Length: 296
Image 1 (spheres, rainbow, N blue to C red):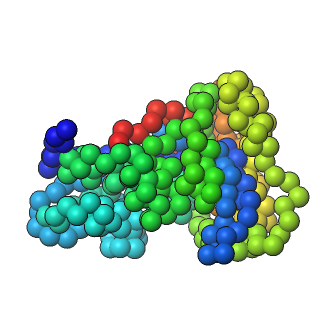
Image 2 (tube, rainbow, N blue to C red; image 1 turned 30 degrees about the vertical axis):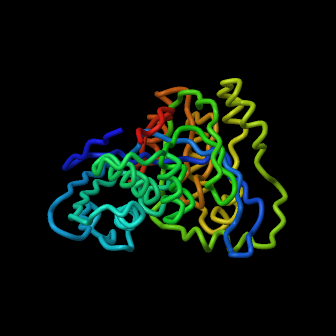
């Protein structure tokens, strides 16, 4: 089968939230094993890829402080794609327009890397399967394989063992990132050896998704990392309380934080909650559940 090459492409990189997040163990290499239900939302970054401008990967972004070299996962993904496929380096320009908050627990960087892999696959007509792209993505970061396809998934192992789930019931999502960042590795380190008294009801969450039970999903939102990050920053609890006070059907922290999201059946309640938060927290967004898979 012949795959068509092209000169430029724009790819969307969607944010994720964690409906559940459980840390189940630690491997000899220091990585932690997890069990988590991941869900895409409509909030996204745009990446415009152009090839053929000479050798090397060049990146620019609307966020001034973001690295534009190998310190950026998008650049690393482009480099790794060319290395793994053996395709010629005829120059790739990446223009990144970010909307997903940085270092927020919403997989912004991982989603950018996944979008670059999907985009390069189409740009070069390489014809790699989703499984092959996930394999390249895992070398970049544990969330990248999930971000290749997105949607509703159970993630196990270090995050790379993925099982597609029934779609999440549609609802409004308010995401709010307080003005500080959290280092994921440090949150994991503080969980070492700590016996977790409360864990998410992952099985119950899977049953709620199977039954399309929105109330059941909201009732089972739980993230074990919230205890660590939330104990350091009072804002986590304050944002949750504000969302719940304004009619959220459930609210938790996403990933290692510090973003907190609330689920709302009512659009009016979602707008009220966002308005209540925006005065204090500028990075507050209203978005929606996204169940479509990304195109590979």
